[in-house]
Image (tube, rainbow, N blue to C red; front, side, top):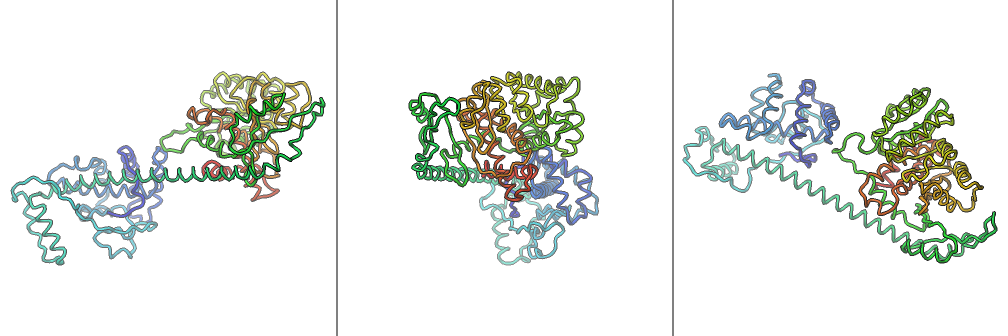
Length: 623
């Protein structure tokens, strides 16, 4: 048996047959025959297995093929005696079909006998240096296969426990067994041979071979089972360490918050101020520290003020003290992120639609759609005008582009795709033509009737400011305005100018007026509210404000919204899923901005930020 690091994963029968179907193809066998550097062949085999839903490395495929060949030749040799090859080796027919088609120059009888006896496969040049069992002294010589991973031979010995046998006449032992003479062997080998003869004196050769194959298969199954248990224990250990680290960070956050309390209470921000319009005194903003219950703090603050004030919670910002640790929200985000597994099919982790893209604006829908893919969606659709379709397609082949937004039956064309979409992003590059806005309005209405989360940004907010009823009272709707768009929405709903001195309160009032639609006010700190709760994300970003960052946010928010609503019921611990999704998207966008700015400085663009999504996502949600 060879010590191989890739033999820690169990192969099911269906997976093994899929491997044999691919490995047995004529072009694969032709590539293996006489090719001493064939790692690219097994990389192709592993890739094709991946397309079928089986996650295997090239080395795992190579080792599995060698194991199947060894068992085949052992079974074939044993079948000459008792013709029970199908009971000994379940994949005998598949291997017989594949290896029988090999040319005699590649597979001769001498090789078959040597492999059947020694357990070494040398038929297709897949072995590596030092894989010979009976000749370990040749490990320094160049083998017939690739030498990327050197394996060390371990001598095969019979098990230490005796194999149960049926007592019978010694005449059942073939005559050729008695012809074996131990005189040519060393003294130690001779003694082992004598012990073997004494222990299995009444066991025929074919029965011995059958028992040995059964026990080797059982040992292999046990090895795989123990390896799976070891991997599960390792995952549990890592989870425990991660929980301990989070607890330590939370304690540090509380410590720093306690140190900053005297300074915060003397801050001018806590002194009563007067409203610039009415002259009435405005209660100071309440700051929350430590691990006090948020409900108790809200009740205390409500009693201390005559006017109900918004519940403000501030997120943890890396590198500075904070009022509430980000650790309280991060576990909720992680609960909603689906695990990556080979058992899923394409589209299960998210199919996102983007409504937007016209002749003038082709970059915005591209940024939103490609960001959704980079965050983790499986498919991303762009419904744009005919003039913009070719341009957007030229940006990336990953996107599915539908040039139907300006067609006479645009609503019907888009409605056909709505049952396949998990969330909809409306607005990036939409434009303000009346025909296009009317189409967008009808698509939003169709999406609401199907319960699809709708994220509205950019020109979609222009449409909402004109007709707020489009999204009003829809609990799965999320608006992502900047300051100017927010001012327009506020004045449209309240018929009065915006009070910019209290953005948190104004955002909460607007959300309530919109029927508790979730609002993400982008700015120096992102304010997120659903009317009942206000949280802020002040995760460190940069001073660079290039165009397209909002499109990245809306595309990422479409994915996080789908994950939040499709996760198990207790994943968000009672918090509104739209708040969890919005906090995840704003944190990710700020982290991408920071990483891109560290590399490019003033030259940072949204394309640079999109390249940082992978590392930013891993740092925030998977580290």
